[in-house]
Image (cartoon, rainbow over the protein chains, first blue to last red):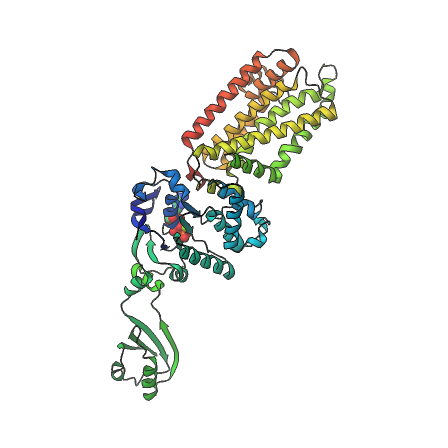
Length: 312
Length: 244
Ligand SMILES: Nc1ncnc2c1ncn2[C@@H]1O[C@H](COP(=O)(O)OP(=O)(O)OP(=O)(O)O)[C@@H](O)[C@H]1O
Ligand SMILES: [Mg+2]
């Protein structure tokens, strides 16, 4: 894996607010690197520094082994940025928006037209290319925001929360597009606070909170931090006569806990033993009212690392 | 750079408020003042229309400062303007194109007003209207640079517009756009030499009707110099993060 971007000890404060407290990470060629973190974690600050519109306080950033400030034009030309805030002109057509931004990267004439049409096609806006964004839905504007950032076919594309507050259809387009980029070998940096998305598209994840990177790895790596068991919670009608011993004899069951009207099982991940647990409950005449499997989610990883939930 | 300037000019034209300000407003203002004050000029060689076309166009041109702040950072285009900064272009192209766009917009606005006043009210531009165009252009170049510089220094469009609004109206009153500053008093009249409005108005009248060009050249020179000064401040102080 070739390292494209390398960030070391990056720090940034806004007055008293320490937005980034010295983060370090690498970006490898052709990966989809996801920054997962709640509001205010420092995702946009990182992206704004990477896109060179915000100056860092401290730290080093190298692109292909060279300080990015040294070859700023080459560096900027190989990046595509999709900012968190919509950055499009409402009063000109979708096509003209895309063409304008792509033209800043030196595209001209037919190549420019083709690149713009291709970008609009990729986000499903080709049929409305002559319409002005002011007539678009929120999701369509988000998709145009993407097209404007990628039409010049950059090597690295940075998406800052591109799916915040949009309709399922637009989200679907966007996530599929990112998967297509992955297949084409484009390097993608993606920030989000939606763990489902990150699970879906990432090849590697950085969990960021309060300006620090808490951990990194593939989603499988991260889930291993939760141990190798899943949790089942079974609500029951009365717990007067539960005998926990027989449950331990079931293959895969690591632990059983009884609390008021609830049985909790620790079960080795991948071992199918739910039916045996239920059979034993029937034997003991325990009436079951609800069953819940707590999956190993990134949400739980986040909770495990920070002690607070990713959302709200 | 050219495509950014083109984009910025179009952004000014598609904004209905700014568009009206640049096209209809000057014509209406000059006509209104011309009609209202017709009697005051009854015995003069120049008509009220002749007079107000000059003074009010000076007023309009200096007010282009407020247009350039809009071109630069108006909320509806601020983020889209910021995005230009992601591209591998030079920093000066971003603010420079806003100044250029406002300048071109002001030339258009001036052209419309001059043609209208000539055709409808047969305004007499004295020796050659080009002298007027020259000094007005210098004024609007300065105003465009001043507006962008003010936003860069104050970091917000609204505060820049408020500050510029006050300065412009004070200088306009001093400069004799609406009436002679000496009408208020001797001291105010003497003080008014600091108003660029007065320099431009006086030098325009001197050139148009008295064939005296020295003052006009001086005025143009000073305005171009001041514009250059503003540009230098812009280059020194402008950071893309001002848009964040
Ligand atoms: N221009 C600014 N001035 C002052 N504080 C700021 C500024 N921008 C960000 N911050 C603060 O810096 C911290 C990190 O913000 P940042 O925007 O990077 O977070 P984020 O992870 O992108 O969050 P979100 O999901 O809300 O976009 C927050 O505490 C935020 O309030
Ligand atoms: Mg953000």
